[in-house]
Length: 191
Image (tube, rainbow, N blue to C red; front, side, top):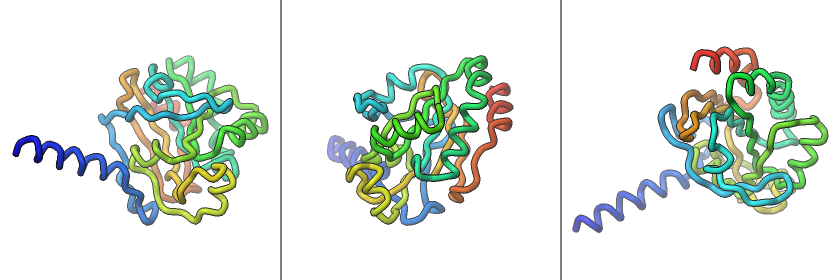
């Protein structure tokens, strides 16, 4: 009986991470103190990398909608402008989107980004973070190269310690509202 209850609880826990909200306002994100799960992503060359390896040191993790989004591009450029200050505070910047590796490469080149972009084209990380919501598929189909089943992440900035634990997060269902770089630097200095 105890095994059945344990399996049922484990199943419910796993299913709660797999849920996709019907709207950005209805997501259930991981919160401060929780750990980022170990998920396989792809770098801009298409190489598989585990989040446990990517996030093995203090990190500013930016989850964005895609290189096609002008608000995301502004945010990525803002992160590039303050990257040296973020590094000086002991953090790395990592950005993740549903874009396939080939589109990540285009974003890196267009924005002249020095930090690493990763592909979550199947949305497994977004789902496990609790920030995925249903979205029409046509644009996602193109940029994920057919791998995204029809959902986007709500843009989120996480500050993680070296144990993959969330120390700070900024999330807003309104995709046009992003965390300002100066505010992020103030947060990093206070942690």
